[in-house]
Length: 221
Image (cartoon, rainbow, N blue to C red; front, side):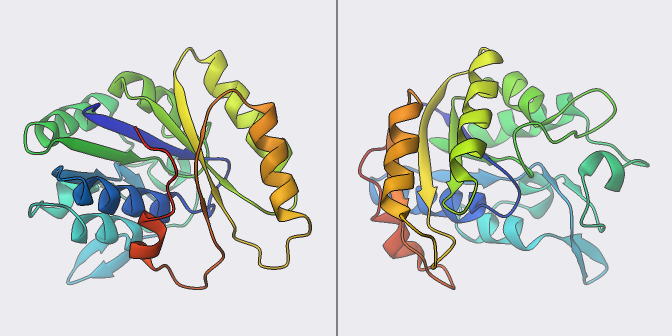
């Protein structure tokens, strides 16, 4: 079992957090200790005088051991915009994120790192999400929202990951549009066009049932 995985998506709002929490539950059910990390988050709310992100709080709540919020989400920004814009006064520093990640690795069997937005979202003036995955040295799992345009988005994201020299070790289909036409055919098309295994298909649900989602994996790493 690898000590970590990086969960990216074909866009923002595709289900990365659902996938990350479901993977955390899955690995815990296998007897592993797991911590989730969302190093950079935009669109945070102020709670008790501190910025907190809803997705990062979910990761914190599902960890095998108590983890302070600042380790789960060291860069929290109020504005719901790209991090390089939201964090212009306090941009993410990749070396600092790596240091925290390494500390988390010492405290759990597996650390799952969720990216922000899509694969090429800029984090600061010099780096984007793909650079963060590279410096962490983690295999990539790609989350695809099964909705209109998903084939193009999946192929472009997968090809970008491959061009970066990083390993995409699987993908997860999230059925986010309950009215999607030919849903199964779209999933089958993506499966045939990218050279990485389909790990699971998440059914449409307005609110996540993580026990059900964690049981949806047909293959994990």
